[in-house]
Length: 338
Image (cartoon, rainbow, N blue to C red; front, side, top):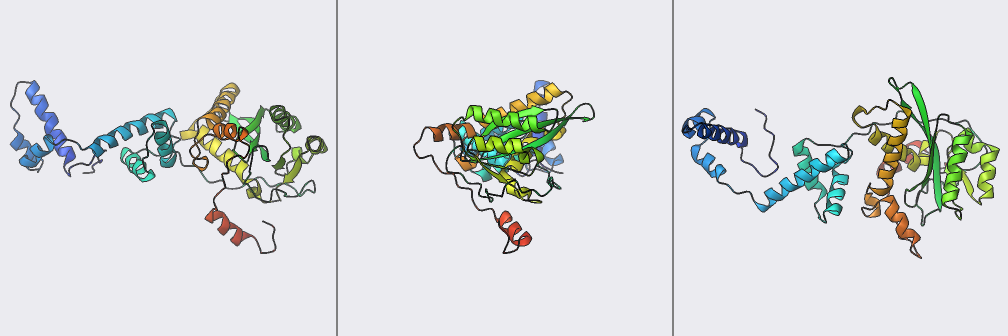
């Protein structure tokens, strides 16, 4: 018979002992004397071991694990199953001033049968026609030393309606220093107006910003009007190469996380207003509540606020990713600019 382990360290015959205890209590409530010996023989356990288990006092570690388990269940419900064991550990440790290891949180989550949403792999990315508007000046250097040094931008598509027959488009600018959503705009059409409005919002919120601005080769970003908008703001334009979605990796990654967490467990949005509210709510959560380990378990808003108050902002270098290094070695020749 399969046994689900208790959160605390348990006996091999935990379920049998629990059954004997429950039946005994029921018999006592009825005014009967429970036959412990008979039940132990039927369940093939030793009577002495049952009594030893019955009077066993849980250790400090056992009790602490049960407290952790309650916190895990609370956060799992609160955040709709979005937290993996690392984010769960960060959330519990920071909110409750603890220092539990990832391994401990992982084991308890596994015991509870709790896991985060598994993000599906993207099968492909959008392929743009070749253009000569701008070079890949970002050159996959996704590190930034201060806010408003490097922005990335893109437009993505959402679906809603009883049969997902309607589309809504989201345009956003992301700051590579703190991963702040500098601005965003939703619209019924993926057109110039959507992108231009998003850009205007970004500048209104950061009037003195002159960052390098990176995008893919979409027609909105290659349009003369957008190019002039960047020049007027004193911004350098950068653009991904053809067939190289990874050139805009942080933006693609942001979309992936957003959609995974918004469409958890087959979540569906029936109306446009419902979807827009969900987008607003998630971006607020991402900015003000979603801790990021790279930033020392702080939110993008906290990192940005801190940086803007310092003469020399703290640095958060991106660690080398072995999978990306391997990808570059396999897909690019030595004379290709990475």
